[in-house]
Image (cartoon, rainbow, N blue to C red; front, side, top):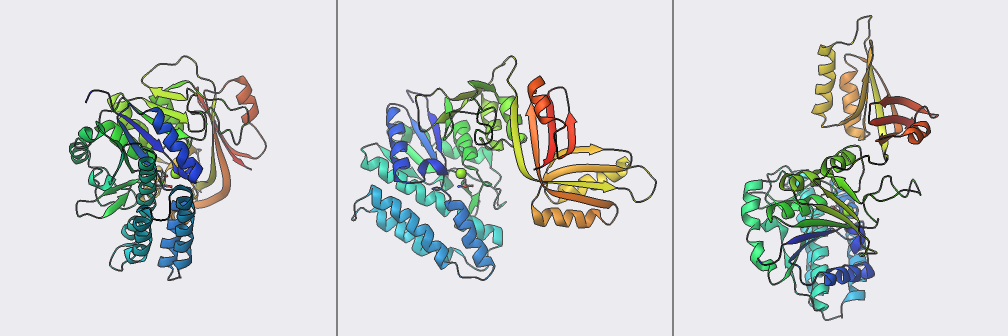
Length: 418
Ligand code: ASP
Ligand code: MG
């Protein structure tokens, strides 16, 4: 290959309507000479809508209205992009006609979920590829399920890296002649069932392709000017970083920054492939470069994580919380697959905060209540200020409604009732 390969990822918002898709084409046109693999998510909120189809099926309710709404949404976009007789209409209508039959008894629920929810990406990429072709760009549609090979952990497929690496090498010669348009978020099991890689997993797909192809960079195109030091919807003065070390970016995602999927960094950092976050409304903006670098003092970074639950386990007699009991508590948390976002212990109690995923949290509390006095609060927000300074410390610590506060040398965390 003469020129290095680059990988682009466009999320749901960047293909949410016909104009957005035209904009994707205009960005790709800027990179005409570049071997480019383009990963695309489902359009707009399609994944949520498909989840509702699965829930309705599971509840034994009618789901035809929901499917019709998804189909109408896509048809509206296609009407704007394609003439009536364009072959894309048949392809997409067929997808929707087949959708109900993907809900087959005999599949376990998570397996069925993946067969249905993955259609959002399969549909969006067909539409995007057809539009690029119509615009005279040499694009071909590739089924990611031929290349991203996973185990059968449905809804959270674990990548078989060796097999995926081998398969993806077949893409290199194709990239010499064409842009590849493929799906984020999906893979395939050894016995041919579709898997998904976890919600918002398209960033991760881009990182998998980028890492296996030894790309020169992976770019995530977003509606923000780059990785910001706070969510601009929450803090109006938020500013983008020019560059960030991989480690810093990985920690941000750990604390709940949703700009990049948490699994994205590792495969790229391991191979030293820079991750760029750029603005799809203004591709001339520099964006943020996440790479192997040392940045002196970074400005404070503020991350809000909503929907938190604080659980406190107290001992029921006058003994102290000991390691035996701590390990019992942590074991119960890990059994529910919950992740502790912050924790604190005292002589007679242990408190920790997790995302409030209701079913899991309630079963956890039930189990803990067998041995401890359990209290819990929901509706909390965890605010993390990484690299806090005097101003941000004053602003966020000891504010009204704080139920837990913790400071280390670099990080301030407060859990507040808002
Ligand atoms: N469409 C999937 C989701 O909404 C994957 C993604 O957008 O990254 O979760
Ligand atoms: Mg998305």
